[in-house]
Amino acid sequence: MDDRGDVVILGAGLTGLSCAHHLPGRSVVLEREARVGGKACTDRRDGFTFDITGHWLHLRDARSKALVAELFGYGDLVEIERRTGVFTHGVMLPYPFQANLFGLPLSIVHECLLGLFEAGRRTDALPPGASLQAFAEHRFGAGIARHFFVPYNTKLWGVAPDKLASAWVTRYVPVPEPSQILAGAIGLRQEGLGYNARFLYPTGGGIDALALALAGRLEARGDVELRLDADVASVDPVARTVRLVDDRVVPYGRLVSTMPLPVLVDRMQGVPDAVAEARAALKWIRWRYLNVATRTPAPIPEHWVYVPEPQFPFFRVGIFTNASPAMAPPGCGGLYVELTDRDADPDVPAVLAGLAAMGAITRPEDVLFTEQHDIEYAYVVFDEAHAAATATIHGWLAEQGVLSCGRYGAWVYSSMEDALLDGMEAAAWVRR
Ligand SMILES: Cc1cc2nc3c(=O)[nH]c(=O)nc-3n(C[C@H](O)[C@H](O)[C@H](O)COP(=O)(O)OP(=O)(O)OC[C@H]3O[C@@H](n4cnc5c(N)ncnc54)[C@H](O)[C@@H]3O)c2cc1C
Image (tube, protein in one colour):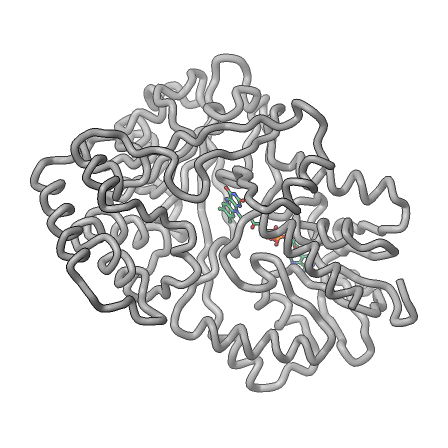
């Protein structure tokens, strides 16, 4: 690219692909897997199409809208109005819980509204660094926190929400006006709240269409070398080389990494003690989920449903075929089930019984197959150590001339749209 040598990008997820796409000259992309897309890839089996749980594309920024418009032809994407629910106390409420209390037992509606009034009377500001639980209690009151935020987030994070910082996560929490909460409590459905009321999805099914479209553009250019099955073993920031597991060495002028931050630090040579300590403080959660194929369509219309109650062994269920019927053979259904326990083998009959109880499948006998998958780095944990640890690591990497970006490279919580934008910004960093 210039006299500093080639730009090398570690990882061909959306951030890495977007970075290469936005660089005008030569770059080398090294990807460990045999396919592009990272978390935004797709598995296919027997006519069923499964993303890595739900991967719905929400675009807000003009730059990402322009990029997606450039990558897809007319009709390749459909825009879908979100249908999401919360299944609790035997009822399917519209999402978000806090704005749709109608249908719950009256004693719970009363407790939630009382908490809301008490929260409304508070004059103290939410302190900086407040926990997720403190945020929910401060904003919505104790009842809504107790019946949704605390049980749901405990299942999702595997950590009590009073141990989680709220800063990054609350961007995605819809905050209805008190008048909307009251309306929802008396049965006036409150829909379309929050950041993701509509989403885009590839018409033919499979979010990998996005990464494949980007990779197609890179291949057509001829000056981007996209190497699959290229597992990075170590990075020498002094010699400016990347060594692969098969011992091949790739020199670089500028290095952009989108691998998970702890993976990058573990592979960097010459890591000082303070950075090693900061790396040891990074926490994340693994994800275990089931793909479920059924011979009948899902009885409920939702695209995804939050399930806060502890007696269900999952916290969220999504129905791919309610968004794109092309994701299963005609008349069949395809679902993902995000499991609370990420260590033990799932009790599949109990999961299927739970799905039938909430109406996501007709009956367990209709299930053609289930398939278990794990994601090692699913969600970054925002505890009290997060801010200082990431600042120390990124500061040292910057001194080494390395940019670590994207959801896992930056070590944050963000979306596919953010990944596309992070890639653009990484390309701007390279060109500086
Ligand atoms: C369960 C789940 C659901 C989600 N749902 C949504 C959603 O509905 N909508 C939305 O917008 N976003 C969603 N996201 C977020 C979205 O997946 C990410 O923001 C985005 O895909 C991140 O892209 P990335 O390129 O930064 O990271 P990744 O996709 O993780 O890409 C990093 C790449 O680095 C590669 N790599 C790792 N180690 C090495 C190595 N040693 N050598 C070489 N390469 C390596 C990986 O194989 C991978 O391809 C979800 C995420 C998860 C986990």
